[in-house]
Figure 1: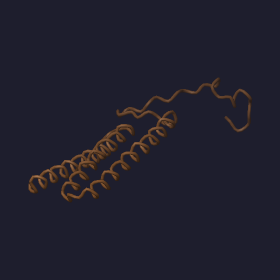
Figure 2: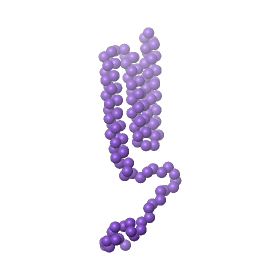
Figure 3: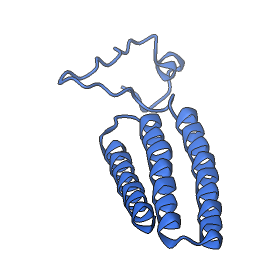
Length: 128
């Protein structure tokens, strides 16, 4: 029975390491903030849960398993709150940024005419 628990713990820890790796790869490779947050909050929290579950099985101690569960729940709460704050900040500042163009062409700049410049109409000094 002890061998089966050790094998299950090893599989859980290896699976958790896999999800941590996938979450980190998503953080590096995904193009926008929301996709990166999704990779971090979902994959890394699942990986942490699997690693802590494997460690709890391997230790075979109920008190240690309870502490690991509490640690995982705090990590879940912290990740969801921080992801919510970061996504809100990204949304607030989305209008200020230029859209990302994934082509070699540069976006066309709007042409300025004399009617577009309020300083020209008022005849202020310093403008040609």
